[in-house]
Length: 269
Image (tube, rainbow, N blue to C red; front, side, top):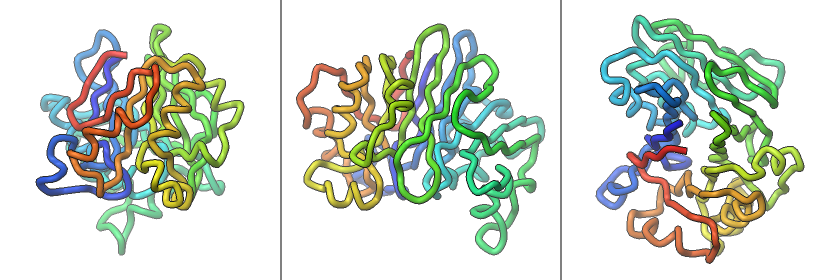
């Protein structure tokens, strides 16, 4: 499978000349399965999801959006995803189950008047909204496991994707300092690529803990602990400039290969 990064920021967009090389859109990663030429799985629906339309080369999106949690920066792009909001699309949106609400009703807390002009069913095409418990998630052509992770303000999943024995883990919002469960450690063990929250630096520990996020050092130590082959630092703080991000991959000495996510980055897992 191929991962393509479309939005790499956390909390809010970061426009302006200091945020050009890494990009200012919020979280979204497109996944294209082996043997296919267009993505059918999208990880999160931040403003970066708008970029998936270009990857589809004029075709409607027919696939699954795996939402890690329902904070604004991870869903705010959904109604602006042109390849999904059109006739001929078939979009399944998966969100963490919580409070006994349906997937549709959970999204409608964010996407409904007076806060937004339409409700979820106002999107064009064939849309479904599933609130799922942790564990295996059925996605055509791909093994997916949803695992609860520590993060403040609502249930949050990390997703582990597996195809032909290769595994990609996606944990955009995670506070390892608050605890890492045995279930999560087991799911991540030996993962080929770990995409992980790295919004804060170690000198910003108080803010990281207050908001339920990771530092760069947290991400590196977790990658080492689970034996990940590659770590991709993700969910960059909106104040972190291009020049700042140039340095973060080398802040913590490690034997793990470390990349810093930027819009347009793509690689085969």
